[in-house]
Image (cartoon, rainbow, N blue to C red; front, side, top):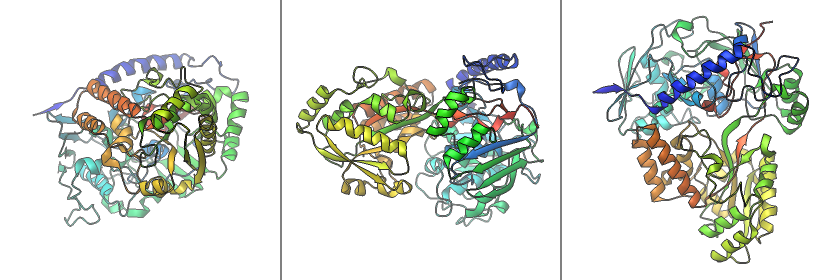
Amino acid sequence: MTTQRTSGRRKRAAAAAAVVAALLTTAACGGGDSDDGGSKNGAAGFDAANNKVAQASLAKKGGTLKFGGAQDADSWDTTRGYYGFMWNFSRYYSRQLVTNKTEPGAAGAEVAPDLATSTAEVSDDGKTYTYKLRDGVTWEDGKPITSQDVKYGIERVWAQDVLSGGPTYLKEVLDPKDEYPGPYKDKSKDKLGLKAIETPDEKTIVFKLPKANSDFEEMLALTSASPVRQDKDTKSKYGLHPFSSGPYKFQSYTPGKELTLVRNTEWKQASDPVRKAYPDKITVEFFSDANQLDQRLLNGDIDLDINQTGMSPQGRTTALKEHKANLDNPVSGYIRYAVFPQSVKPFDKLECRKAVILGADHVSLQTARGGPVAGGDIGTNMLPPSVPGAEGQKYDPYKLAGDNKKGNAEEAKAALKACGQPNGFKTTIAVRNNKPVEVATAQSLQASLKKIGITAEIDQYDGSQTAGIIGSPENVKKKNYGIIIMGWGPDFPSVQGYGLPLWSSDYILESGNNNYALIKDKEIDGLFGDYVDTLDDAGKAKIATEINHKVMEGAYYLPFVFEKFVNWRSSRLANVYTTDGYSGQYDFVNLGLKSTK
């Protein structure tokens, strides 16, 4: 028996929809401005689009929406892209069975039907997911999108030897024994040999999971679950010109220089409940100099930054002083932190790890990250605010935002004594050389630790070689990297989509490792096992909270900040809002322009 599962997620979505409706009414009446009061050039006001809709009623059909960026995507191939802004932008030209809701804040992380007529019909045991495709969904040449196209697009995730780079959750959940060779090595005539996905007809697709996973539908909302048509699959070259299933298609692309999308005239609004497709054209210009990008934003030549990682210090200072009404200050969904590999002595001892946490000056670390506005609130634990089960600064086991925010030398020295290092010790802080803010953070931490007798050298390694340097436990031990500075955000808003690669013993790898602390905790592993078996939202959030507590009790991490950005929106933009679905970025897909001139 199959049932349409009604979860707490959908109940929350209904409440969120009511809030959005109220916001839209406010916007239509000319409201939505903050205390900043807007500006003469029509900017909505400081933080006017932060978790709420700014100027929704002013969006018009037509015009050219102009993005700029200091970095191109890792790939525009829906299978290979892993940058957050790529996932956001790719919805212009790719659709999925389900996708994130086009609503501000937490509601944007909810799942909504896209190519499918509804969210999944899920069997009682949580192992079978069934979808029906909508009528009228087509490719850019007018041919119908079929269930076989969806299956083939997902099968490409298995072709990691050709299409490396993107998320592999679907591969791990649907084929945990790694039995399917991928579509390029598939010996079946139609290249659709993955047994875990069935396509009984062109409009029905059925997923059969070997083991239930309560986040499976969130995985299907990732861009890696986009359909790809076999006759248009150019394999490793697909990212240069993906074939569109969305309202826009590629007109031109020069990597690292420019990208232009134009309307897909075969797309039908009636077949797409998600996308409004306001602009006629969407352009992206890439700059090698972030300051040049910021200046073009300030000049009004470009509408917004595609990378959505905040303005650089120079541009940010000018913008906050002269154009504050054009800025939003969202929480990014990332946590920036230091992590302590247990393979490097004396960080195999709990109290030695605690000594660093207690001895650090957390206000100084916050300042190094950019302060409360550009850096974020002091981090007190390791679960991002956008993940259900998060408690924010309410959970502060080491009083990092309270009594110990400037560091507690007395408690730190007591911890050193308890771990057999009463006179301190020497270690090395590993930090990427292409991240100036991380270097500044390392220097702040170095100064704090010196006061309690810990001498820390700073090693700036090649930031483009992260996977082979800090991602190699053998190299970490060899280099004596006792402290690694890093950051992490959720692939999808759950403890599985955030914490599994960081904290599960199953994810300790010889290369490309992200479990830098080398956590092998049976309780944490067991809680992750319980999590994937739990189908109700309240139960999942409770387990997420428990996992976070276990991680913090182990003192494996020193969180710096719950990161925030200062992001620019031009005065031309309408229907603007940030979304938890994309880690505090603006939701690109329904941005409009006030004027088409």
